[in-house]
Length: 143
Length: 113
Image 1 (cartoon, chains in turn green, brown):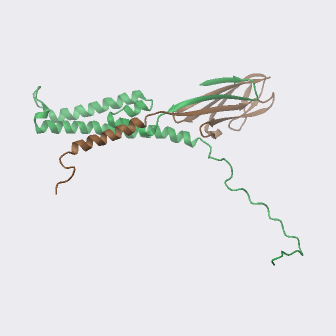
Image 2 (cartoon, chains in turn red, green):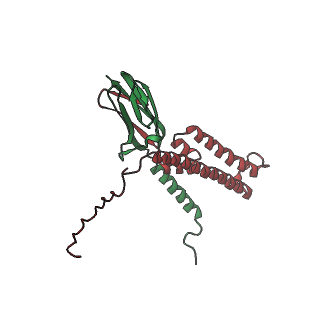
Image 3 (cartoon, chains in turn yellow, blue):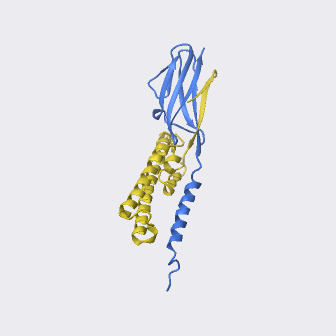
């Protein structure tokens, strides 16, 4: 809250807000939760990051289960498949995180925009002048 | 006929991801928006109006979308943004309104002689 005190005819106070841009939500494609952190919600960002990690590692572990520790997943088709599915799960959570961040940022923009008065808050067309009856007995020159 | 990009799909996926991240980083600059609350200082017994304006575009906020609070020597009238002087001394106008960064508030104090 900004407080200003003036003993004049009009008292004013001002504030400058820094608003995130909607395109910043795309950061969540690089890592889930980055878009939320950029939007000013680091707790949600951390939750999305954790969800992405759990999804990626969990899917990889499900497919790669049963192998002895020390086996490299890069040396077998099943291992590569597990890596691909885990990466896909990570990217899927990233896409969901991107959509959520975009909705959050856009929602704030829409709320702020809808609170503004319409531009040029005045009638678009000037009212037509009232018609006055022509005096009786007088005719226009071209009639 | 051999397709031009055949055999190197990974490179294009990487380029696509890099382009998306580059757009995201480029769009990450925060936008600054300035708001101003202005309130008339009426004489004792008079009425005044307060309004919030987005300074960049000089567009006022709809008074009914602002949460107005008055304290001290001021009391609300029925009209959004309107207030009347009920005593002498200091009166405060609080305005809470939506911005692209969330809800923010501004406050002005008015001296009533």
